[in-house]
Image 1 (spheres, helix red, strand yellow):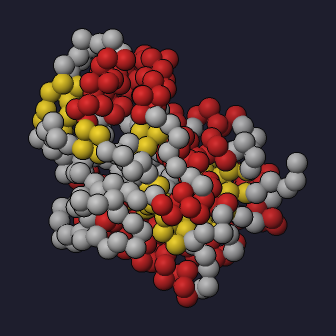
Image 2 (image 1 turned 180 degrees about the horizontal axis):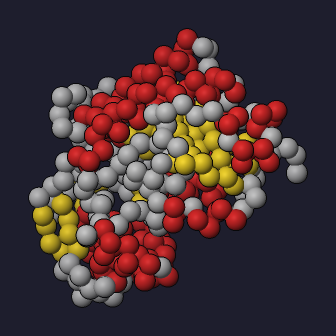
Length: 336
C-alpha cells in the first residue's frame, strides 16, 4: 500500500459524516472534527479504536490550527500536510431548528471561510456538502445544477436555505479567485442508520416506532412527497466526486418520488407492526423539496442510486432492531 492521504472531515460525527469517516478510514488517515451541536459521539465511538482515525472537538466558527493539536503528530500533519477536506459541518435539526439559527448562519459563512483558508494553507482538494434547499420550493421538473431556484431570504428558515446558497457563493468566489477546482455536492433527502431520533426527520422515528408498535407521525398530509437516497449511495457519490476531476456543483440524490405515507406503510408491513399512521402540522424544516436531475453524476461519474427503497428500509430496520435498547434510551432522553 502506498502513502495514505490525510483527510479532514468537518461535521464527521453527524449522520452523513460518520458514514463518510467509516468509508474513508479504510484506506486513509482521517481527522474528524465536530462540536456535537446536532451530532453524537455515539456515531463515531467505534472508530476511536482505529489507529487511522483521530477526533478533534472544535467549532468551525473558530479558527483551527492543526499544528497545536498534539494528537495529530502520529499523522505527521506538520510535514506531510492535508490532502483532502470535506465540509459537512452545519447544524441540522428539523424539530429544534429555532435553537440553532445563529450557529447555522455563522457555519455557512464564517465557518466556511475558516475552512477555505485552511484548505488554501494545505493546498488540499475540497468538497463542500450543500443541499437541495438551494433550489427553493419544489419544482414541477427535476432540477439541474444550472437551474436557479428562488429562496425567501427573510423567511424564518433562511439561515439554512439562504445560508447554503451563500456558502456556495463564497466557495465559488474563492475557487475562481485562487484558481482552484472546489467541489459542491448538493445532497437531496437521505436516510439510513444513525439518523437522530425524535428530531422531526421522521424516517428514524418510523423505524423505532414501528418496532415498538407506536403511532408513526407524519408532519404533513398524505400527499407529502419526497425522494429518498440510502446513505451508502450518498457516500459513494461523495467519494467518487472527490476522486474525480469534476468541480463545481453536482446533484446527489434519488430522482424518483414517493409519498411519506407509502414509506410509513412499507415500514409497518416489514416490521410486522400494529402501528397506525397519524398526521400532524408540518415542521418548518421539513418542506417538500424538488427532485434532482442526476444526469451529470451519471454521465461524468457513472453514479446513481443503487439501493432500492425496500432494501434500504430493511437495512435500516435491521440496524434499529440490533440497537433497539440503546435507541429506545436515546429516544426517551430526547423527550425530556
